[in-house]
Length: 393
Ligand code: NAD
Ligand code: MG
Image 1 (cartoon, rainbow, N blue to C red):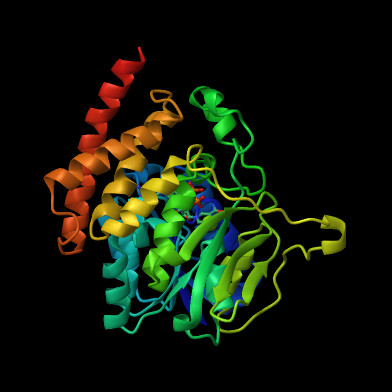
Image 2: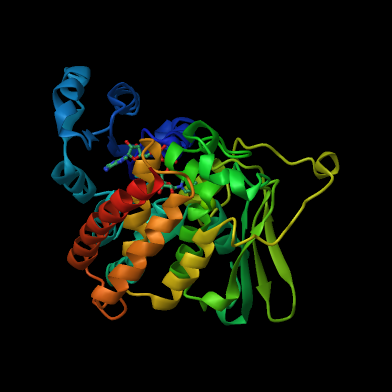
């Protein structure tokens, strides 16, 4: 039996992963499930799957989790240290599906024990790409991408030589505001930004899709994971979200991965790799779909893409700064304290200021340095948010 843990089990990716696990429960021994606020879901899944331990990131909810698991044989734990301890429990395969920079440390622990890391948490690669790749190499652990675009690129590269790759195209739906007039974007509401045209995902990544911060993170993720020159990586608008990515080779061939907008494709691929197994996903009727559209993204509409280019060029700790500033700006947009278009303004200001004040390019990428710079970037972001809000009044 394969021993598996799922970090972020209560989220969108976590629940899709559990859906696949629950279809073949005899194949897996579930070690740890982690979650946040949704204690009822976490407890229910932990009981159903006879997990060894369930961990909530929120220490104030421990009593509730304990009560829900009492007498079931599933241990209840809470807090950041408990999350790390859960990640140290021996396993063969881990799904890393916490949202945000909080996903980095538990993923590193899983790699340190040599487990295969199915990586949905793109922030791990954006904030600390070289660190997580080195940790995997040192421990003979494997990282399998779960972001749909990166899973698609990974699949297009099977049996290929990365040196023969001329370009990597990752697709973007264009998000909720693809066709909005530019001057209306500042007034976009939280409800409008939280609706995705094609994918059903967690709220934060859905808003990041509307602003294209998600695609910006994915450009950086592509550079870090596949180790290709940023000049070879492009984002292309594809409103149908059926082509997930394309890899272009030196002979002009373009290999596309096409499939339904269902994350169980990428999760299932990482779960069963190197085999392919039956998956309960829709089979596309291309004759009925008829048309696949593509368009170049407009960087005036999506400044996040331009910022991603700057981050890829600078490298080092600038990805950690970019991500942290984006997370804070997103928190404030969700709280109704920042306008939609101000998120990119704040992130750009933080990047500029911190690259003047710190040596982001050459600093060593250690967990401590990433945490320090993440903390500083959040403080800088708070200052910029205060100024931006004052200017808007
Ligand atoms: P989600 O918001 O639905 O779920 C997030 C999970 O992380 C929940 O279990 C939550 O309890 C947990 N969590 C949140 N904050 C935490 C913290 N500080 N410490 C510990 N746990 C915490 O998010 P999601 O949409 O499932 O996305 C998860 C990750 O996968 C993100 O990095 C996202 O970018 C990536 N991803 C998601 C999709 C998708 O379809 N949803 C696609 C590609 C990549
Ligand atoms: Mg993606």
